[in-house]
Length: 431
Image (tube, rainbow, N blue to C red):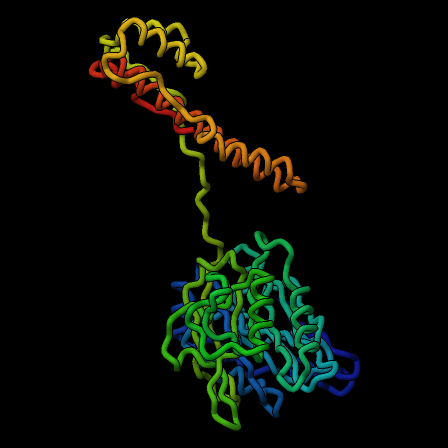
């Protein structure tokens, strides 16, 4: 259990330590949230992202923790933007067992922080804050390592270069192995992503975003596509009251600029995500809540369907023409180049009373695609392109052989009066 905090010697000398941030022993979730947590979160993780905007005021943290008890939804972690001021990285265990992790404020008056539920306090492996605007914690939840990230991207008063630099720093925080380490990012993006466009991937940006995408929104959406992150609170159709996350103080305009992002691998595991006003904290932002499955959905492995090579004679039918039967069991009919000889032999013995002659196949028409692919393969310089053309060429050759095979069989069956020879073509080639 993490029962200490990381502060400088100056804080200890001034008497500012863990005792200053401790709250009443009754600190816990509401009974409704506790019941929901016990019933539904065994295979899920619930996360809240919230820009508190003023928690750094006097008694702001205590007020935040007290108001949190009224939240009726279960939660495993709360990702806070614009949190309390702290000169150093702090990891505090509050009464009740929850863990409060705060990043240092090097150049900014407000920090980013993460509150981890007491259920996972012992599973906290790491907490780092590589930037004033970014902090993350590695926590094992439901036998899986989760990287919980809290990020506050620059406002419009900062240049685009600063915004891009923060996105680059946030990208460096993401784990490399997404199969064993899952990521959840709660951020105040200060950008309107809006609804899905024709260039967006369905698993990255949903159809139910709010507003018209801005220039910063283009940067943020492009970054999410590059890093394969799903913006969860654009995926679900909600009323406007459960979509907007920020009210502009000057004009009162409602915007959706706060988001929770998860790995695209977890897209199918996202159960719900919405925004709502909660906790009596003076802020122009609203919290975003998201519930995600603890494990990525299993994917069914695609398997090559079984193929029937050639055709198979049924032993129960004994009424084949003797010439065809002899030709088949002698192995001639298993070779395509012998089909013309078989046709000539049968036609000479039985005549052409049926009006059908030997199978006529136009070599130029049938092999035009093949010749074009062969020429393209010779001209291709890239190895990957040659490999792709080779696959297409093999498929074209198989189609050509199958067509010749079918037409030759039709001719043979027609010369054999067809009535007793239909089973000869019971299972045509499929490959």
